[in-house]
Image 1 (spheres, rainbow, N blue to C red):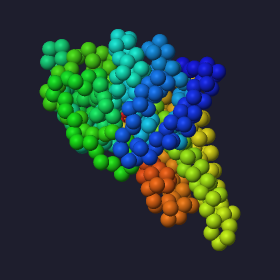
Image 2 (cartoon, rainbow, N blue to C red):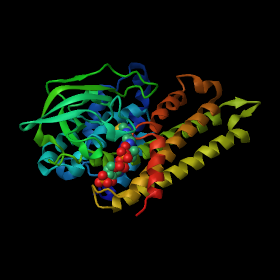
Image 3 (tube, rainbow, N blue to C red):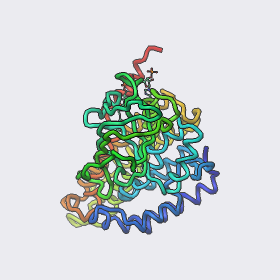
Image 4 (cartoon, protein in one colour):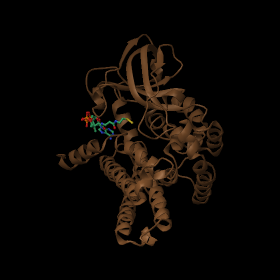
Length: 386
Ligand code: COS
């Protein structure tokens, strides 16, 4: 799946213009109000941003992974709250249905996901199951042609906006094989939301707990119709998501580097521009080289991702997505840290953008698998016996 080159170039140019002319000027409002203005959300819908990754036959734009990464790179260059509005529709909220759903499920949900009418979010994490996702406790007990769900999901991005969740619950025994993925409409009786999480950064993004108390979900809402396959669905969704986050991280690093170079050209000390001092140049050079390395990894991994059969697990590609996630998110952290350093005292002041990005990038190393989980996936792959 991919969009023809000419249409893609037009789309990318339109997204870049939208970022420059609409999103960057609105960054201060988002920071102040902790909210993305609804007029901007409507423009995102009109541009088709909610359906970037959904095939044209289901109403989306049908980008390849390589193309999606280019768009994610562009979106990383503004406040991350903007991408988050439609990020779960493009990625972790919808991809489980696309990869493993039945044709009826795809038809029933994906067109509304692609248009932005239905916001989907991904509910895997729980109070006692984060990195150890296979230990999740939310129960789904069969009762006639429904399952009854009980449990708590934690830090669920876009939960306050969601019309439905891709939600993992336990239909069987302990371990990965007992987990199923469900499509759970958010208006079912028994679903409630926790208070909004107060986060370190990424103001304007919305996360909270999702509490399930005797929620009756039709058995037909198990993704793919067969119980016990939900862990693998979740892992495949995360492999893909990690690549998207890698591209996003490169985008933020680019923005911070641009801000830093701009400041180094303007700011004068000891009678010269600070950028004329080699110690400042060294910081900029390290950031540029690391960004180039990270972006090269993303492009290579995305090419491999597109070359494998769609929706299938390829351990080598998964390992490389973990390499990219680990390197690019850590790299973005270092670039943001140097960005603050180049700005000196100004880098600690909220009205300078690097202060926000410094806080915003911290999450990249945590969500969709911490750096340590990526190390574990890479290490296990290298030590496998086959
Ligand atoms: N794609 C498809 N299937 C996968 C897979 C992947 N990427 N990774 C593992 N599997 C399969 C395995 O092949 C195995 O299948 P079989 O039972 O048929 O052999 C099954 O899933 C269980 O895998 P494994 O034994 O490796 O599971 P573990 O419990 O050891 O956990 C990790 C694996 C740590 C990799 C997993 O729990 C993980 O990714 N944790 C982080 C979760 C995360 O990112 N959370 C972020 C919150 S969501 S924003």
